[in-house]
Image 1 (cartoon, rainbow, N blue to C red):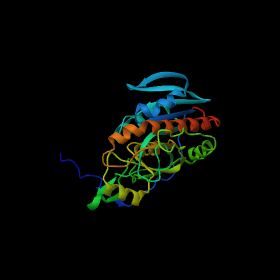
Image 2: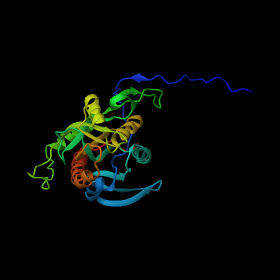
Image 3: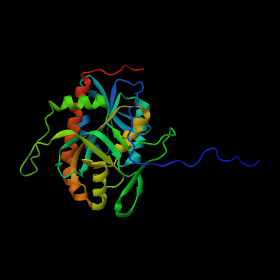
Image 4: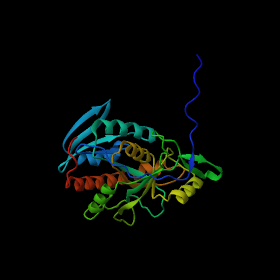
Length: 285
């Protein structure tokens, strides 16, 4: 017997930069999942945990504890969008968190951002979904998603979490950047964060990303985490701090500047979780 004709036509590509629409969150447990790409980015979140206990799920380690009255699970995803997607999906399905926070460092694609300044992701997006054309100009489009939809490129931060972040801003005090001359106190504010699987990037590509997406920071994981949370209906917020300038060869600058940035992102994440602990989340379904 011959196989039948294909039931589905090739996907339709919709040009543009699709923005995720709000989706109702699914039932959740009263806990916060905090993710970082590497251990340096989660060290101070783990330090802030009371009653901490190590654990493993599917072979991947995590630490569980409490910040205030809030149950918190902290895990490291590894670098890059695939690792971040894998760990986020596994841990969201296992623990059913009320929200996912991702903290860590990012390169400063916006020249106004200083080392240690923290951007809370009013928008998180992916800058490498599309067709790369002449002059490193990206033609963005919505590709077919797992629901037969067109997957967004831009993911607005969860409104409830953004409101909590604004409250946390009122009392949070960053560490002073004494390793710079003159010293300064980093700024924490809302902004735009973009992700892609490139550590170094050309000047032409930087210019196109700034023109089309207008980010303040660029990194390698949060766009994918935002996409997982969108499809699994879990509120998400990204918290990143500026390390090196966005550049073609960032290795030495990243190693020098990322520790201070890691500290600032983690410390504000702790402040945010303390704020969330003041308002209990939904009970376990």
